[in-house]
Image 1: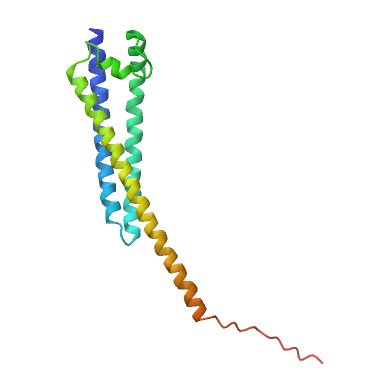
Image 2: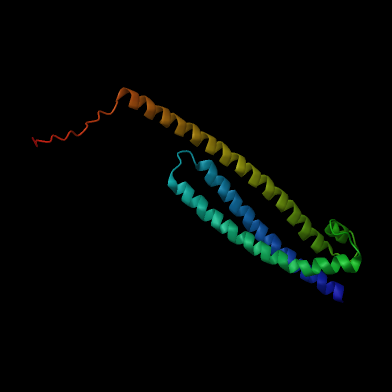
Length: 166
């Protein structure tokens, strides 16, 4: 009876975790769309990105809170079933007490996290390429300013004070 209650609690907690990771994945996809649209470095895009990053941060904090709920279960399962600290989840899923529903939720969660990591890496690569493009454009502007200054030197008029005291 106690094992069934623990499994039900784990299903609920991992289910919450899965929902939050789906939300995080959706926000990361939105981030990708915004990054892809950036071509002229308007502040509107950066405002949208900043807003999105704030939302993602909020979701990650929620994920942390949910995962904190798992810690007592993890400790109890490791101790109760004599599982290794590093591979406890894999070993736990191989036991007979785990239901198919819990296995499915955890497998979906693991797969989603892998996809999220891949998408995040792609976004990072895209951001870096956009940053490199911006740096190149800024260097072109800098060169243009130097050329312009060489053709149009500033005429500096020095003030001269005349003292009529004799």
